[in-house]
Length: 475
Image 1 (cartoon, rainbow, N blue to C red):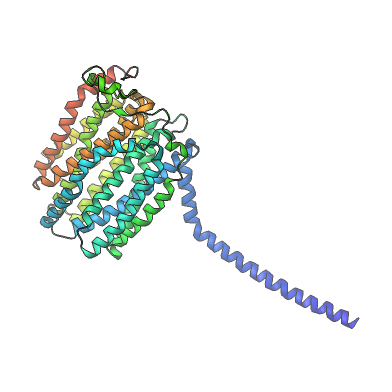
Image 2: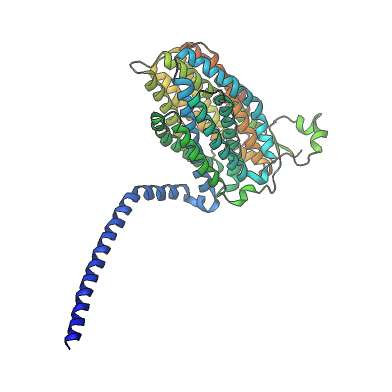
């Protein structure tokens, strides 16, 4: 009995001690898990919020949500490389030397790009079954080139320029493929202009978040921003393959000709086109809208380069050069975001009239800024140009959706995007060549817009009066 009591007592004591240890360990573990959950909550909560927004209204089921997230990754990576190149080529030297460096940058990168860009669309037309691989390849190429540029920045090597050309080409190739992919991922009862608004807005938001992060990384070291770009683009490479397999389907597609005249149907080219059955023209509304958009994209490239140097030499009243550039950049970004949001709200209402109206707004803003040159009007012009560029591009997308048969719609997107990029390059070249005179520069900008507006005004209004294209024409 004594032994039994001793055994029970020992068991009881040990049992109490064991429960005490277990209870203490459980309370400690629970506290650790609670702290961990509290620390993860901002990240996981933000991730769930982003996923909910990108996958809303059927975008998750169709795969559009994945593309929205991929485009955000693309925008973040591109802005990281832009911050690194701007700090190296532009901000690190005096204005006169910077103009020479940027002129060299244009000559080595953007001049060849004007030759390569028209090839990108037709080349990607031959890869309809490999769009996910093409987007992943564009991401991976920029990841590797970011590492090459980081070495060139540290050592001051000339490989910076061909690597930058490679980044530019890969970025535009991604843009062309992305434009061709969107029609394949439309949710039910979802207009193309609304889908493009969501995709574009995700890129703008990611750019706004990544830009200050890139500036902070650059403060640590000139190569750290590029290391950040490398990580982002590697993530984008894997994310590209998460898009639905239907992205690689080319069922029912053909190649679009960006020509509005009947010559491609009944003129001397008829015999040549008949050897390639199924070719279709895209209609006068699309080509006139493309011309108007090209003038706005040309103005965008012009303002970026011209104002970058002008504001270094002649900052806005009472501000430093960096703050002046920041004000103009924020104005342009805010206008672009507003134009994207308005485009989603307007959906596809009278796209021809929208294009004519926004180009006229930019023309008026440019003329006013040229006559009464000042800080407020320069910032206003940047905002109006950003707004108009976003809204006009969304309206062009709506016209392609309306007038271009589905069989050739992806090809039309590829060709139009390539032409718009060439227009941006041309505007940038004009901006870097002009003397730093505000009135002269903005007058040239107004002339660029006026040329595009007057050349397309009659055709767009005529198309709006007739309610768009009639039945698709077959070559």
